[in-house]
Amino acid sequence: MSAARPSARVIGNPIAHSLSPAIFSFIAHELQVPFEYEAEQVLPVDLAACVMRLRNSSDEVGMNVTLPHKEQIIRYLDLISDDAQAIGAVNVVQNQNGILVGYNTDVIGIERTLEQFRVNVFEKDYLIFGAGGAAKALAWVLGQKLAGSVVLVSENVERGQSVVQQFRELFPKTRFTHESSIQKCATEFALVANCTPAGLKGIEYSSVFEGLENLKHCAGVAFDMIYYPEQTLFIERLSRQGFRTISGMNMLVDQALASFEIWLGKNPRLSSIRAELFQFLNALMSARENPKPLFLTGFMGAGKSTAAKLLAKLTQRHWVDTDLEIEKSSGLSIDAFFKSKGEAEFREEERRVVEKTILMPGTIVALGGGTLLNPENLEGIKRAGTLIHLDVDAGTVQERIGLGATTRPLLAGLSLDHQRARIEELLKSRGPLYEQAHFQISTLNRTPLKVVHAILNEISNRSQSS
Image (cartoon, rainbow, N blue to C red):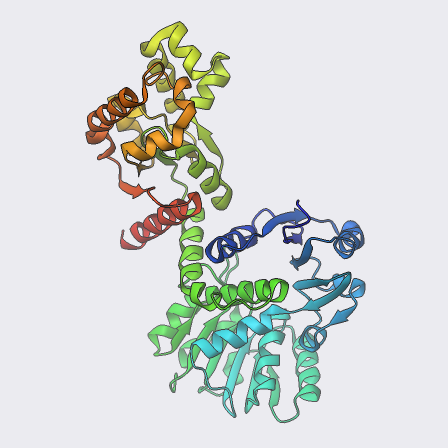
């Protein structure tokens, strides 16, 4: 990484599932800020060395911290914010020229989310499910804003009572109590929050939630800190009972913007990209959950390979480029293959590659510009997954391929004028094939990230409407 280019990373174990690289790439791209970000798997035994590397770095502005390091990292830092100290967990570290400062942006995310939804905390009554880090972050915010009372509902009685005692001492003006079940609670609260993992994929709702149907909304709000799916069972049930609802995706977005601000300072455009980041993340999560393969088609120069690679990285899928697969299997470049074996043999080899990719669920496939010329390819692809056409015009094609036109079998040896005429001719002839895609995305005046964002949004919209 260049010393002149600020960078950060997220550390954890495991880390492959993290949304952080996608989030911060999106933020930096939207703000047009030079910034590099990556995920790094760090084992507990390597945490001290990882922190020291950050301390000694001249370009790393900080790091995000996720499980299992949120508590252990505190011992290696120089300063800790008051809220992080009380919660006992740090999820953002700032590198101030070798001085490492720890923050908990759960608190910032909660504060900004409640402000966004105009939740008035002062002297109101609150119900929190859970007694872990997220619950403590919410309790901190409510105590700071002088809530009237906060009830923590947790089946772990010892832990729940310990948290209540801690926050009674921190915020004596707010009444903190613990209950092991909702049955013993009042029925009216200004806010009911799920701060447990219940509702995450593979984690069932426990008996602690029994009695939700007895809660009365009294203009209250239901807040689930789980960010996907947006409509959790918790949210759905309380919505039916008249509660306004807040998805955990709001908090995730506000946490990310807060991290960026901690590292690189205030940016007047940060708040303006909030809605777009929210939309992007919902679409990204929807795509991650969809096992269907995605096939990108379009003319040469449309950016299929670049988009497929980026889309695969964001959605954590495998990607395949049919032209590259042919080059690997034959040991020949596409240009050399055409010259030595002819287009007919190339199309047959292309058909065999497509036949394989159709059987690979979750794959992102960049198709050759002429793949759809074979009706068998077109039918199989449309049946197996989603076919997406990346649209481009002749002028942009010629501009993008530039000198590379000499290695394009269908354009090699042509003058610029004849290249342009040939491109227009091929675009026109293949147009009816491209029109059979499930949907089309224009690549004109769009960066690869913008193209991928448009693809994700369209997939998400189609998923919601089906």
